[in-house]
Image (cartoon, rainbow, N blue to C red; front, side, top):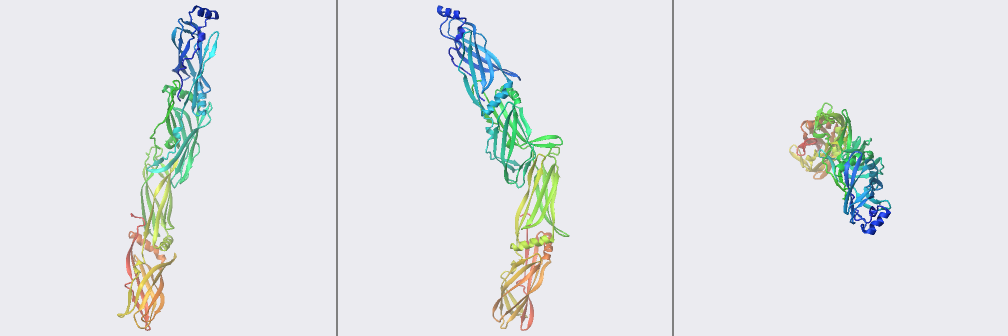
Length: 604
């Protein structure tokens, strides 16, 4: 708010009637030459603040009048003036009768503003776009003449809400994590009356988390030089949905009846005001209502005026390092583990949650609602939840679940169908209820992949079939792959070529196999082949064996007991008929052992 005052500058003839004592006296004075025909002039009118009290504001008006005559003028004329701000008359001043000495005359008039008029002026200032035109209208009054002089006008403007308008791009960080990203803030005045001034402000925020951010109640306080002119709560919870953008709106109303108190503080502070809009979350505790600052919606500006002297108004933002004033819980460690049980396997996750708030603070106890999921491929192994009250300091709790044999078999089927490849995912989230807000507390998730190659030892193996020291045939280009997998069994497809080294035909009657994993027999059977190979020729053979999937859970337990390690043993044999006799031949070169390791939950 800047302002006005100053010089009305050499307003001619304004006090001409100041020479008028009477009609006859004027004529006599002029005819004798005692009084010249030069009228007195008002050189300047300057205003400054006088005594300031709670009820009224004093204004001292200094007037300079030049009397060009050689003799003084008796006190028969007066100067009156009105000072208005917009259409609100603030001051009506009158000098009374003036006596003028020859030459320069200085005089001081004292009047006052009734502070009850401040709300009406403030409403006009806001409704006029934060602009005020200060007008000083002087007039001269005498026995035979009254005349008005040209009004002196100056306009000053404030810009109190400019700092609230921002495409900030700032983020609200808690424990190094973005809780809300502030995309835009705004503020606007409503239509003001003498009783109230609507003030609306809002923040458009994005929630980048997988859980909602909710404030149970939003409160606000608007103060001007520590004079609280607005204070209330929104009364309704505000929720920003997961991974979405929302707007937090606050509609406040300034109590204009308190503006006279602010006006006094503004003038006593060298026409400087700090406007503070404080937005906070409201927490109802046993100790009463507590406020938790929300600085991304709060703002402070300082504006300065020069109302009477005609200077320009200035508005500047005030930097604030005010933080949230609280710390939500944070995850300090997560440990995952498999274990064997009498009924199968158990997957557990031990979580340590740190509540950094003091025990005697409003957040000394915080409710935490958490959930946790573990999947291998598309098979859910564990889905658990917990609701607990966190005390100050470290809090331990566990997510766990028994994994049934059927679940393990379903996982195994997915593992085989996915090329002996498993994607292990652990994910979870928690919501901390802080009383005034519900904030997400993410549990660290994990995505890792492990692979096995349980049939790889047979690939492209050559095997000689010998009976009584004589070579009968040769198996070559052998290969083994997984076929159809169900929860009951897993098909193993064995194929290759058989070359008959003898001159007479022979028949591969059956193909036998045994698969052991950590001494758990997964397969021990034989399957019919029935392929006859003429002498000195080569034929292809195909057959299928099966793992008993009912044994997969036992193997998995042993695998976990050994630190996710398996000693795999695969052996084959064939039954060959030659010249009416059958011979069982161990296929030692095709048989193999292998070590299978996984890292389903340990360090990578």
